[in-house]
Length: 119
Image 1 (tube, rainbow, N blue to C red):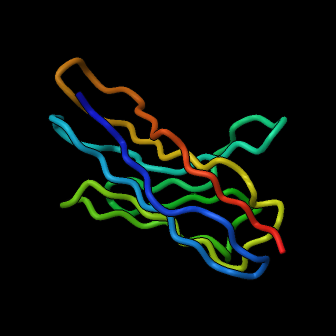
Image 2: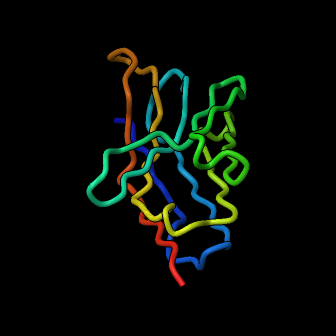
């Protein structure tokens, strides 16, 4: 089985920084895209940032210039550094990876980690 385990998150004041990390474990052939999504109360889940295996990144307009996504292909990890946090960044953040395994390629999701930005 493949699992995504997230760490980080928590409570931070506006303007502060947090780092989220996610590690993929299990038996698989490779990981294509890794990324982070978030879902605020009453809203749909949205893409925050994604990164391909060759390092190409994309960001939601709302986080460009503030968030940075990175990955370590050797360790099968992806991180999200969130700077200049705003109250509107408050949400549950989910790690997502498109993983090639024995049964084919599919999306996997982490359990979610709460990020709260408040003074």
